[in-house]
Length: 216
Length: 243
Ligand SMILES: Nc1ncnc2c1ncn2[C@@H]1O[C@H](COP(=O)(O)OP(=O)(O)O)[C@@H](O)[C@H]1O
Ligand SMILES: [Mg+2]
Image (cartoon, rainbow over the protein chains, first blue to last red):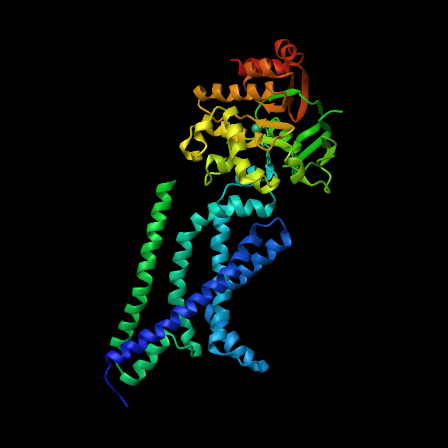
């Protein structure tokens, strides 16, 4: 039964946007934890830890996110483990975001001159104390713009979860198209909603970046 | 017993031998000026004393603690050995007060109020009491270096290492830093300082150590060693730095 694209459909799209945001939030939180671990291991003094974290980043960055979604959603069911689209998406996106955030944050930690570590170490601070009081506070300022930039990528990339039936903005758009047969209108609306989410963040990230350059 | 004891210290970076059998002992209260050409190993020598650089041979002992022993708690050692760097290395995100009080608070657990007074005290010593709430980027190079000295003093070290602390400064700012250094020396601090200020070394140091090609080439009482060098290398060096 084909019907018109109405205001109700628009509201449905907005409702699905909540799930886009929810998945982004979960991925950002999970990825943040993984990323923090990766970044800290990458600057630690223990070579095997550095190596392990490096391997993780290499593998994740060298494989498509879509494949991870398939692995979790379809792959695990082979072993009789039923995975909901939610869990599969949350896990895949956390793994993915963890690798990228880890790299971003490692870069920020390493951008702090070695002499800052030395000054802290020479005053008797431990590795963790140097990180906490000297390195991280300085790296944080550097990290905010690229982190916000990545968040924008993440919001857009959650659309990939549509392929495993996770109903977020893009998937809702597909469903609406199927019943209204108005792909142009529907997908333009979907695009507009994504833009409305991402644009303010992009602007914010730019402003932060500018301010950082001025402060130098 | 000497406060610092270097025994046949060998330091290599890969194949490159930077310290080639350095032996030196420093008594409490001595002020050792280390001079020598760029690349002769002066900074490396200092950095071995507080364990910033691992060594490949010999031993370094500070106040009875073997620095190069893997079992040594370097953090404990470094509470007693201050170091001031050529490039100041203040913490740019912290105020002068926080720069100074960070280590006393975090490492020695000095309570906040007491730490503030400690900061005021050491800042008065370096003549910067009024800058306690400033940030490093609001200070001149000379002032930053004086804060770095104050930060080190706040840990009440038994030994202080200074690595060319006036070399990054504009000429007109060198004097104020040397004055502070002299003041610290007068209070009886044991000091090892790498410097190109030969006049200052002659005036303040009890002993001069001339490094050349990773060895202690010549050493002795400041006035005698600088006044009548025994080796042609020191003579050449002195005539080069004194023009
Ligand atoms: N981290 C390092 N890696 C490799 N070589 C180094 C390093 N630090 C210093 N060197 C080398 O060691 C030698 C001595 O350096 P240094 O102690 O800094 O000399 P100085 O302070 O007398 O100028 C130089 O040849 C320098 O290139
Ligand atoms: Mg040097």
